[in-house]
Length: 79
Image 1 (spheres, one colour):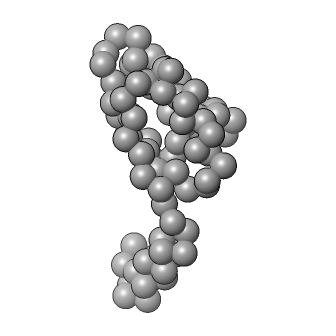
Image 2 (cartoon, rainbow, N blue to C red; image 1 turned 60 degrees about the vertical axis):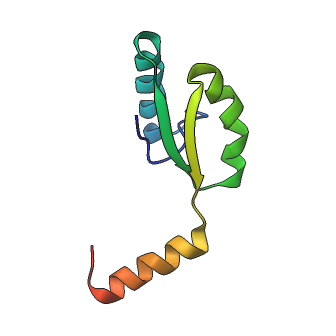
């Protein structure tokens, strides 16, 4: 399963939805959950999430780099 952000703690709408889907799927399937971490403070939720879904794939999203790429795409006329 892919989520665009870490779904823990489930305190916003997008995180809550992804968390509940992952929780449901993990009861019936061997689930691998992949997501981006865009805030270093969210890394504290990785251990709690791993108790629910042991197989996690995560990558840190570095804001200055992502902002530069977004701006470059905007200048080029991309979406």
